[in-house]
Length: 131
Image (cartoon, rainbow, N blue to C red; front, side, top):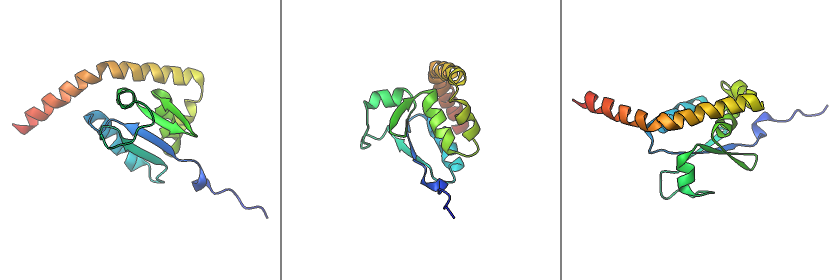
């Protein structure tokens, strides 16, 4: 009888994120909770001690991940992370379709444009809560 391959042996995915961004930090906290199998290595590049495979500013400007030895950015990086998380895996697999990935990338770029305003809004709401 042939042994079935162990699914836990699949390659891990590494994710670089901006831990100094409150939105990013919250999202990564959610992803960590969903990653019950521990298949994603989360690396905070806002920490100056962190070793970076590419320019730190580039890593801080866009979401990056490494899947099967390839560094991906933007929606492709999110999709790589999602494929490791059972709940989000269907979305990550759907993103292998060029049209789906194109749409997700457009949504991600739109988010990047409004992110500074969201940071300001979060900062404002934190100040109100502190009163």
